[in-house]
Image 1: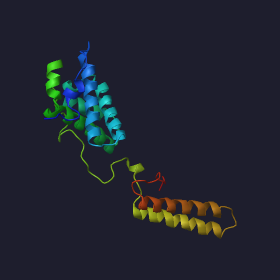
Image 2: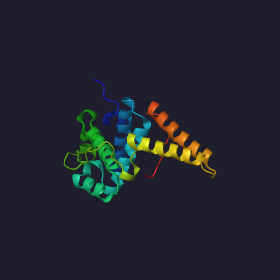
Image 3: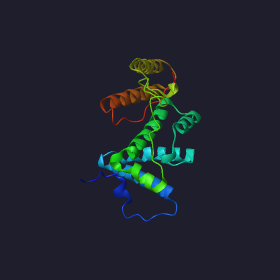
Image 4: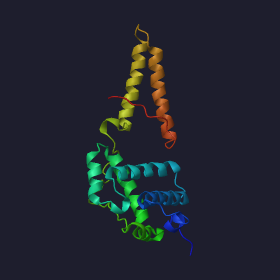
Amino acid sequence: MGRSAGSAALVLVGAATPLRPEPALFEAMLEGWRRQDAARRLSPTITRCRERVVRRFQEFTGAWPWEWRSEQLEAWVSQGEWAHATIRNYEGSIALFLAYVCDPRYEWPQACVERVGAAPVQICHEGNTAVHVAEYEGRPGRRPLTRLELQALFDTADGAVDDAAHSARKGWLAAFRDASAWQSADNYNTAHPFNAIDEVSVAI
């Protein structure tokens, strides 16, 4: 029976015994995780982002995955002034990494016990992770405009064009350009939701 792409046996095969097994074992785990993501055809960008989160958590704890505990995760999250969505992303990355290294099919628990005398455990659970509570989870000041707010913005912009056109002051062309640009951007984002251009930030 063939082994999975990210199995410990395949990642560690032929590796020399290091003087310090802990860092080498951690790097091997991350390499195996990258191979698993590649086998699942995940975007390399997603893989790199998740790995950065795992490395940041390891640096915060000063401990290795087989030493991680739930209270360390809770302390890490509580000290960071992150948006709700960011917290969910970070906790999700840690949970996915631990789900991988705790899965007996990848043989990391056995490899850890043999090399460092302990196996990793899942530290993310319902009691200490953020839940999805709203459609938009970022900071309130950065949320996208609703359709009603967008329509109010466009109506205001059109009104500014009319006011400038009937006044003696300059500015009609600039007001018209702004109104057209905002509506064109909205039309493009509606037609291409996955290739949207940068959001227009407007203070209401």
